[in-house]
Length: 589
Image (tube, rainbow, N blue to C red; front, side):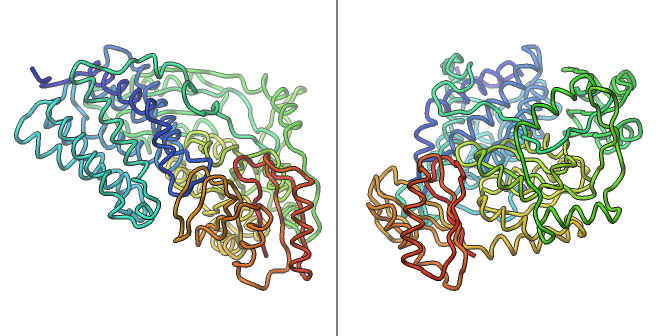
């Protein structure tokens, strides 16, 4: 007999089976990249996101009702979201949690309503929704769910209709997006969502996929451990760090702005992320008992942690000092300008930092920067560009890039830990932009996004940074500067494909441009790079070659020699980038 309704335990079982189904097909989803590059990561990002959601839902406990389980999964996905596909998945779960508000159990109509709410929330999260993507799949799947529920109000029937509609929607994505049709693939995010629905349906039919397949992070996929923000300066900390989850009592929804305002009156580095049902609280002050007491007055607390920041600060400083090193630039450099601003009295307020011998005054700057980098080499270059901000704890590097996108939570931690009154985020990857925008909406510190697409664009943006301007005033000129530099990424094709109207063979070197797609494909790497350079807009005078982990200094020097011979009037610089997947990152300016 079909399952008519579901409680919190049933929701958790279905979600666990959904995660297992996604894991079983993660390689398939990663392979659906439009470009035949070795860093397809849609499946990996979605899996990391739903694993974070499952971990949080598990902590809600087996007795949690449907509303609590869905809210916990939503919160975990929000903080663990990686890449554009992961962020959209987290928004689908957020909408579903909203749709299940007040439900101890849910039937087919309730599920259909939740899926419809997930669709609306996901579309709102994307500035310019594109059809032929995961958005199309959730929209058509939720519409089918509503139609099915109005005929037969049981969960299994609604899930079956959802799966069928999702499969059909995925199959037609190439007809909606020419770039998919040309590459002979369906949308990877949509396929991932279809697999999630499949797993949930198997659980509803009494055949849940094995939980052990997703029990250990990193099993069966090329996963990386979560990497915290790599700060490039002193950590500002004093007193205690208090963190907890607060859940609303029945009939008493949380007032997140009021909670934020009160905690700011008794502490610093305040973050309240969540909604009227569940929120995560983070506060620095010298009275954790007051923070906990206030939390108990507004809701029910769980996952309480208290850390003595003073006792940890010395070890943190020593570890961070070894991580990055930067030298001063000239008077016209970003470092020189920021030093001038500090000397002119724009250094902001002094706050107490913790050292081995007690509090030390640390300058809080009015402006800070958080940048994403895929390797230590590129992180060091970015750090050097922002040396004055680094020295005052107002510049941080979050490690991540293709196939290792940082989560929303990691970016949020970096923003929260940066000693600045307002911030700029340089995602340095198109697949990190959506997560960065999520962070900007989750913190009361003004955050502006400079949508850089690789680290070369990020470096160009930092050169335009003016510490005398606000984050908002800097964002436009920095974005323009990042687009003014021409960049190419050089890698190896992992399959035969047609890209930008050109045929590519597996094993060939391919040269990609963030605007135009494929610039060149050749069996010879140097010839491919030279062909790619020939397709750039002429007039550049400086070419910088960042060589990655798959290239040697000798390789880069040989390439530079060929470039100098082909373009004798162009200065060529070589920098160790160490980036994975891409043999060279090239910028022309």
